[in-house]
Structure formats: structure tokens, C-alpha cells
Image (cartoon, rainbow, N blue to C red; front, side):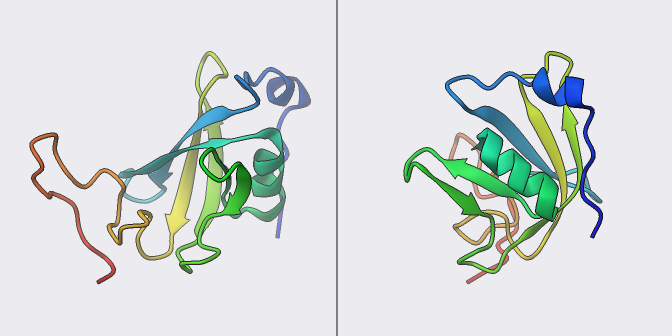
Length: 122
């Protein structure tokens, strides 16, 4: 499996605030936004090395491999950064739902409480 080979200068210019960088996760095929998370440098390195998404859990204060308990892995197809190098965008192939509640996307409801997303798991 080929690893990501980022530009050393671009990688060193990433802005980690309090050790974390925000990450938007998008379906590589449909471009649907699946979730939002954070990475620390170790999570980013693991993601680049394995092409499987790893994140930093702020609540558990630990690394987590997406899908480790649910089986809903994210195969990372591409990693992009924004113009300010302070946000990452992961384009992924998602196995089943991205949301821990069983929905395809974490963004499955409106502010009014209407469910608009697709439930993958029951």
C-alpha cells in the first residue's frame, strides 16, 4: 500500500492549535460531508502511513482509529489542506455509516430537529 508523500515544507506549515488541527471528512465519491473531527500530529502520521483515518478524541484524550470498534472504517483517498494550512479535508471511502449513531453522516438533522439523513445501522 502506497503511503502519502506530503511536501515537507507544507507538512511543517500545518497549524496545530493546542496540538490539534480540525478535520472535515468528505465522501470521496459523492462529496457528502460525513463528519468533523480533530487530529494531532501522531494521528495525521498514522493516517498517512496506513491510509486509514485516525483521529484524536478530545473527550477520551486518546488516539482512535475510525472503525476500530464499529467496523465502519474510512479508507483515505486524499488529504487536502486549506489556504491557511489550519484545516484538513479528508476524502474517504466510508465503510457503512460515519456517525456513531448509525447514520451515513454525522450531519443528519436540522436545527429544527428534523431527520434528513440516511440511517445505515439499526
